[in-house]
Length: 324
Ligand code: ADE
Ligand code: ZN
Image (cartoon, rainbow, N blue to C red; front, side):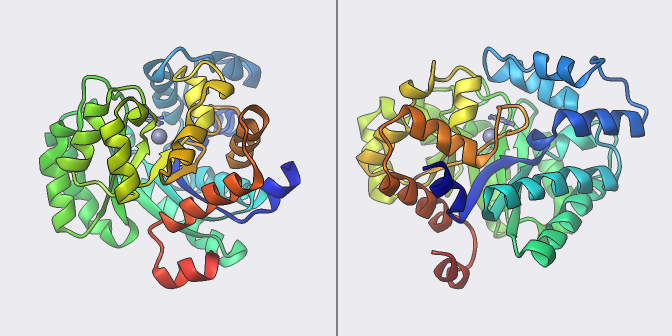
């Protein structure tokens, strides 16, 4: 089965590029840029990755991103993830980035986006990997700040396919960002949002009805509303589920408690994704392997999950036909 998973050509729809920063590169960039990090060894960094919930992870994740300064740093970060795509047989990836976690530190928007774009262009040229970029707003910040970031992003509109919403979920509902999502829709951006990762189903309803999103990131709390489950099934709204992340952030106690198989069996459009693989013990294949080892997943289930992600991607219908 491991070989079967490895060999399947896959897509990834929920990957934070900052969450692919491996401890080795964090160390190298800290040295290169003369940035102090609170770790003496790579093992120290790995030991710190012991999370109790989403916020405990985010504190460490934002601190880690402080080592990213130059365009070359963002290139190296993205390129290292592309090498993992090659290893994992990921043929198409839609990556999130968090511009505000960099612009707030005085890094220019263009430094971030151009470093990422250059690496993705090289990935297409060298490995044929296709990609898209989704810009996420940090929901713990204000809508005003999101609007400012949105205006800044317009100069790079051609590089950004959509906007998303991430960071601390509880206490920062989608309704806080109605205006900026409305603007993004008017400008033709695709819309996604993290919803129902930790927070209740009202966040998912708001994301769908107030932000008009086309995909839900995580969404595993949907199971608590039969009304929502019916709607998600009927409308086939994609849920980009991240099993390793859910276990590491204690959304579920262990893999056998994970509800992805129930969501799939109910007829929802769920896919498997790695979220922040450098922090959550593994890339895409490892997520599939963990599910297969702990849930009653057959080959058909795995194929369905992979097809769902290709189908739910923002690639053109022509490319979809080629891939599926
Ligand atoms: N930013 C990076 N990973 C995240 C996650 N799993 N949830 C919310 N925000 C994030
Ligand atoms: Zn995420």
